[in-house]
Length: 108
Image (cartoon, rainbow, N blue to C red; front, side, top):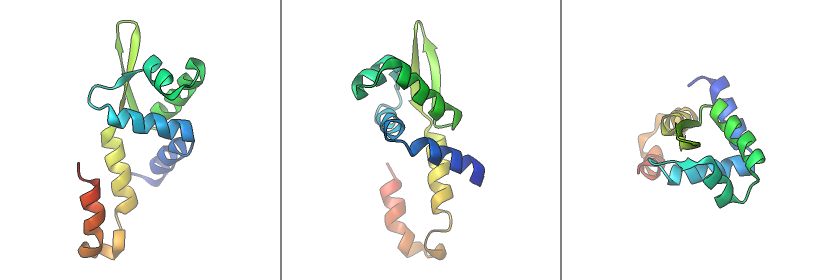
């Protein structure tokens, strides 16, 4: 992952509603949630939610698919993984013992 892409992803997550949306969608993988359901669960107006979903999608953190009249959103777990690896790449100066707890907590 390049620094510019990481910065865009981190910037998208640096807003409370978008962070809550992303965390909610991570919890609902692999099924995802419809946009209306996301807005309902987080008590956010639909038009505001649409803006947040678009920002997260542009940052590569969400994917979407149309199901009839609904759009179902998914957390892009691959991008999350890349972002976490980017942030921890030089963790502890390569000292494996110090990084082990971090790696263990990142494992599902």
